[in-house]
Amino acid sequence: MRYPSLNIFADAAPKALAAKGPFAVVLLEDEAEVDSTIQHCLNAGFSDVIVAGHSELLPKADDGLHLVALDIHDQGAFCDMVNAVIQAKPTSWIHYCYNAEYLFFPFCETRNVRELTEFNNEERRDTIMTYVVDLYSNDLGQHPNAVSREQAYFDRAGYYALQRVSQDGKPLERQLDFFGGLRWRFEEHVPWLKRRIDRVGMFKAHSGLKLQEDHTFNDAEYNTYSCPWHHNISATICSFRTAKALITNPGSKYAIPHFWWKGSEKFNWNSNQLMEHGLMEPGQWF
Image (cartoon, rainbow, N blue to C red):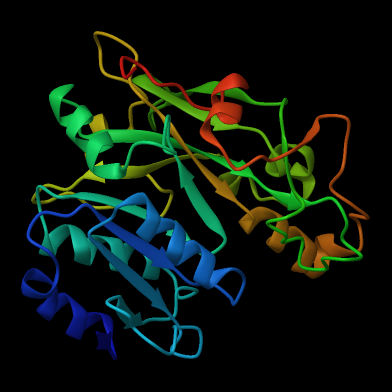
């Protein structure tokens, strides 16, 4: 189904989307790996996939997708898109990502997102913290946009977290700012407010919930990395997005000959590799 504007989609969504979800929202910034990103969401078991982007970037055939014409580069557009789904389907689980980004969670090779969200419901937990793991090609001559699923590498080290504080300088309970990957190694090319790699990329909607432009929510509990009584399951969003930006932006493209370093490791496209490096954890899910 195609929607020529976000407003038209928002009006139709309560009836057009499946009764319960979970739902995936794919935000298109460019042409890179659009099909593979959508297929990854379908394979994960999402009941509906909503694809939003400029009309020229949207797939020509909808094939059961919900295609929304929207310029994601407009200020606040990604928030408006996700918040429209929240408003249409409160109590449903929602995942959002950009093109050339891929959700991985523990045991995702044998378990789907429905099993993941059911487990989190049993844990009385309404969010799954996701960490953005930067992917990049090891050969920018062969892959000038830094994107190659066959030759994808990631940083196995160099990650850290700092205490998140309120506007008056007080520590926020169970909230941390996480850093690492290409945004850490090339931080001189990344604005401070864009350096965090934590994103609540999987969450359960409720009435009044809103995604904000810094990828946090207006509900403080949704920004926590775990519940008070034990560690929770976490996930990763493996993403070419930062690599694409660094190799495209005029201020950085000529200053970066390659992304390779001693901490680079070939990505095997499986959850076990990510868990072994501590980039996500199963919590109590075994």
